[in-house]
Length: 293
Length: 285
Image 1 (cartoon, chains in turn green, red):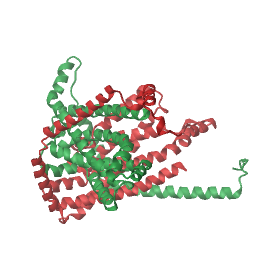
Image 2: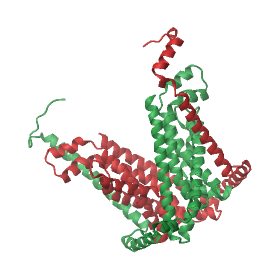
Image 3: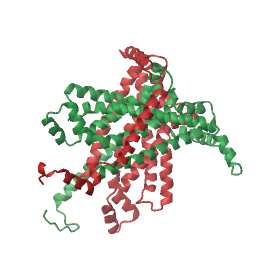
Image 4: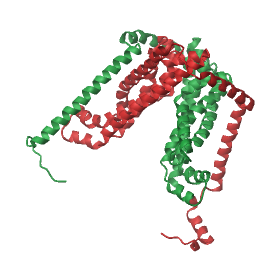
């Protein structure tokens, strides 16, 4: 790099001209971007029936509703008030346990599917072109259709209850994790794969001894994260009759059992937080092991 | 370094094992513990399978039903309501757009308050962060149900649900980018006599703005997906039509809606990915 001494006001004319041109260009882009944005905003507000007057109308009602669902807790008789607020605790805890089990089984099934699918959907590992195409497209469809929609359909096919919910979450998880797994598998070091191929290993042996050891920590970490998400999902699948605590919550909201709503929401948040913390612990355990090796 | 096969004698292996035991795998106790964990997880899975009645008969019957449903789905038909569906898809996009936009606007100040390098007062930061965790802990669909009760059926409830649940997520993402800024430009502006406003404008904003925009676009993609189901609980968008068609067993119309959702999500993902690449590209050059 050559050295320049720059004094204010002594810049060469062509540098200044270039600066002006770039700045004008940049400003033009910004103005066009803002115009597109304003257009999108207006269109969105129109189709979304969104206006300040509606917000102003809704705000007091939201406040009123929140006041209604909050329990009355007095310091003088805190114990009794808490007992009254959480009168359904044993039943709710059983439902929360069911919710967590649903998420567990669904994560397990979904991950099995994703692991099988990802070896076909990673372009560096796939045995052949058609398998790659089919695997990619099926994972895409599996993850783009929301779990709640699968649940709605499965409730008809498999009947009301947790079975439909578990299958719904499992299929969605398979698609979502399968994509991430395939991406992780595409980023591996290919030397062990070539080594095994050169030594005459077949496709299954190559996957087992060259790929799995490299991707396992990644997969474990994604799976834990997926489990956290699935617990959240399992908690709302009851809205469409697919098992778990959601059924209780939607009943409380629809039937206007105000204080039950806040109790249930609080329990769900606590459960989700505990699961998140637990998963974080396990994840650190895995990472710690990796660094040691 | 070359190792000769002849050098690997049992004595040498034993010496190495004594000097660095962790390289040779875990101790018996740690291996037993990890096997116990795996066994526990498998037992739990079997328990779940039994408890939730994963009987082959039930699965077989269910799959038969599912096959019948899928056969009914093709060919997809509009039932004369194509324009209605298209309008609902646009409404879904509008809800996701407004929800994400307002969530981002609310998240920016909260993100600055929740960042270590901005707010040194740690109890305040703790409060902001836990509050955000609470907002994120409650699923969007639960917020939607609550807002449907509070402000009535329609897209407004959905928009509010997106705003509330995503303010938490975006504030977390934003504060991560704020904490990861390069200190040098900030110190440079300060050393040249910049006041606090100028420091934020010329030190922070150029670094964090592309990251903010990119996270926001990413959340927009995610919200388009989640806004498609908000209608199932009556909070506006295409989900209402979908749930209604599924409940009344009009499978061929449900299938058309699903295809429309797949196409919309695909297009939005493509456009947003392009935009994000441009923004991040600008940030790194």
